[in-house]
Length: 152
Image 1 (cartoon, rainbow, N blue to C red):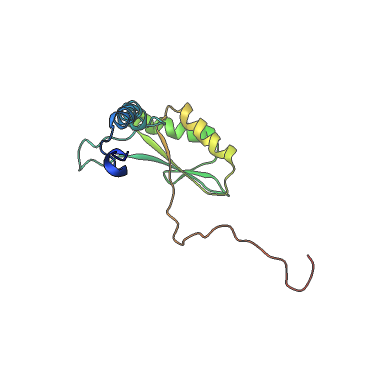
Image 2: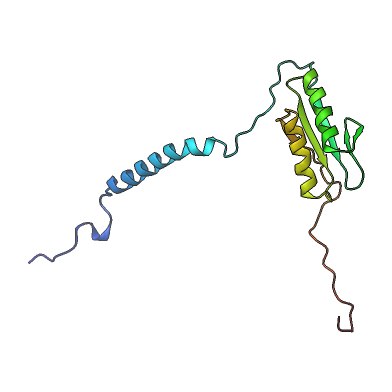
């Protein structure tokens, strides 16, 4: 009598690829649908367009120091009304004018918002914030420890 042995001695004779193809098609559909969402920026931005290389873009520079008066293109603007007047005059000369606010790190948020409101009242809606790259690497906030050998 012949012995009963499994076909192929335990080797895989065929692979059913249908489940793998189904999973790949589902993943492909998911990637196609989400690709449009990923490409669209979350925050709409109004970026400047370069029309000519030789043309220099004029910006309305507003410097808000921690102490002292606000400077507009190097001129002092002691009140928000004066800032609005200077911004309106500059916008009348150039309707495509962009403003850049350079605010010191210690300036209260309220003062920066007052500056933004003054520019908006003058019709300047294209506003950017200037920042400088740190010259020394920042490792994090300094942690002060109590003196050794005593209680604080």
